[in-house]
Image: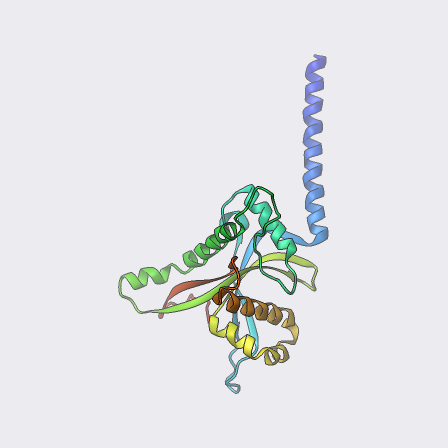
Length: 234
């Protein structure tokens, strides 16, 4: 009887200790402002003004928001490395890449980064898979090329950090690079966003020139039904 009570007390105690640890970890994440559990896909476009042929005002639209373990391979080691890479992000290096040094026995950061970004690409393609079906039955579609980059950014007055997939047209990214000062003037409330996009534009150009082994900016081709009013891309 004494042994049964002892085992019961130990089970209850283990339960409360485990619950307390989970609560403290969640509280610690909340305090630090880190939220790595979800991935937000954000499309970057420009606001159209009838009186201004040149559009420099950036508009951000959320395409979707998904749990991280549904976006890429649900592997604890890969998830842990992604979180570490997100914590390493800085304003000068806002993208996520898995580098050497995370674990001594892992020597293929390029392949592991590609595994993550491959999952991101599949999510974007699946979200707009309607166009593939339309194309296969010879309905009118428009082929669009976009670039995406997995980043770690701060929001809400620099207090919250989250995972964000930036989806942007190559032409817009190039224009931001060439007209950086104008975009800063027209986006006083989004200066950080303009800076991040400028860094991504520079990185994309360098990757095209073969200067980086690890690629962090990837293209994705979408077929957008011309008569599909549900498409969010502008």
